[in-house]
Length: 334
Image (cartoon, rainbow, N blue to C red; front, side):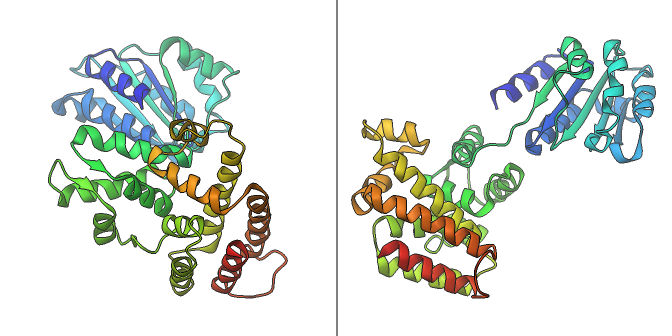
């Protein structure tokens, strides 16, 4: 995120590079940088003759080079943006010859999503000498809640830890999807608002009481009544609560709990750092550790592996996933 801010600042200050090669598994920042260049490098009256958007499936490397070598008309620069450039993965290395001698009046932006070029080869080395190679890496699940807070902060919004966790559990690590939901909330909420679980439930449709976060908490507390209520809700709404996701989240929780038992320093701050969780959730692990000694945690982890396979149809009967989830819950709690 800091690297993106620096890139944007440089572009704003007119410190332009002849090539921006934007690659990696996370498309969110690739789109952000590319869209910023598209909207800000040229004045509106200059774009008609000097800005073009091409798509990888429709062009060749030779087409791209031909367009990049053109001179701008009545403008200091021309901007050539290649979207879906990963469609050219078999021939992308041929762009190295242009990168070795790029047109100084062209800003070439290559959006190479979900893949990356080989850093040992000529293209990467050539672009690094004259331009920018930005790799947009997928965030780990435990990093996304912090990313949400950082995105909201400059816009004068905050979000409670539970609300952020609900978004992560419902939308995963897809930053574009999460950002879309956050932008919807910013339309209906005044600046200075805190996004709460109630707001998430009302506007996005994620239940604040019946979700994987609450199930995990109930299991950790050995609150059998609440855990069974949530599992019953899941079994009645299987499309919104797939078992494979629930098992995966519980597996991560108990794996972290196993790690917690092995920590010599159980100071909350140290625990948060070691487990890579928000300090807000540390008490959840402390309470769960009292209810699940290390030997029991090991058994639960093994059980979750077994039910992960069953949820994917391996070695099980055709039992509905709701029934499998109820059976899993009984084995964990007993």
